Length: 550
Image (cartoon, rainbow, N blue to C red):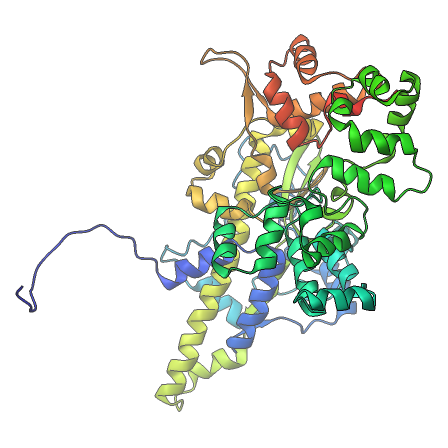
């Protein structure tokens, strides 16, 4: 084989992203809290970038009123500027549906455009495009009562796993158990690790789930005998009674935590854990759960009564006590993940029209440091120092442009959503119509990936609550086989199913097929399997046989 160097030519097509565009994309996909962090980190790294904190806080309200014509409101909605007023200063109606999609997007600095630097010179001279805007520290509270909607919506409770880990930290086994575990080759630290593994194996309902193929391959490769045994118990390959002491006790410890029913492998086991923890729970009901669960699911009360040698009425009375048990114990706290929602946008109704307002306060506080920027005019500045200041000045400009592009793009996308989903903003979530990202991308003339980044992690305050932008993109159910058949949004179908179940006779709950038939009578054509999917996946509602109340 001949070895050596060769000179050749080839053609290929590739896309090269400039550092400015990469920064713009990175800023675009950040949520509000991540953006604040990015701004603080950039200011620490770049001395030419700063926040305007010169205006005393007590003077902010006075300045805002005294020079309203020169400053932008903290929200750049279509009615926040003088362009929304007539000659006499009165507010004019802004018809969002007829041409206001780009009303507040005139300052869209595209990273790829070779735009003028006049605005950035103004930032150097004045500190901001809006010199009298009330600048405050990112962590300070808002003085404007209209900003109350922007307060973080925080669930102070921990997630399901966090709650269980806290209980594990407080758990202390008795000395006898710890000695028995040590004799089995499992000290206390190792035992706690096994319980933590079980906690991480819980789904949102609080049930133990076996590892997927990739995770299981890693488990087998690590060859940890206790972890392998745990997986086999979860998968039902080994009865819990036949498991080793460390594995069996780890599962028992987890099942002793609150909420009761956590750590079960199936619904029957979860019901039994909960029932056994209730002092006055009927013994007959516990026996039914243990010995006749399949007949219970099939509502074969007569068969249960015959097998147990009791009256059918006694069985029905015992079954009615099952309503005290939670079929999804994990949902009691699994939805309580620590999650802070900071709203970037809001949609408000003014004179019958819906308008979008975008909070740009983070952008308006950003400015170029005048002292450092002014050093570039010093003729005695060394070459290395001049290059340093020039480099960081360019970097600061690019960063401000990227932040501005984030807000402008986000506002454009939200305006398009309002135009495409008018019924939602008038009537609520049940009236969301099917919509895909491409619909909005086409409307705002942006790339599909850009719209995807904008809608992920960004929140808007609407008349019907706070929503993530991606929540407005829903699938639909086609009504009929024809290509021109109407499509009903999945949100409307879910709402209709919930209404039917809420109004059903609890003594004779409707099957999924019966629900599908009722929806058909109401003009919504759905298959039984579709009802089942939404009932279980979206609504977390039990099947008819388990909803029955005697």
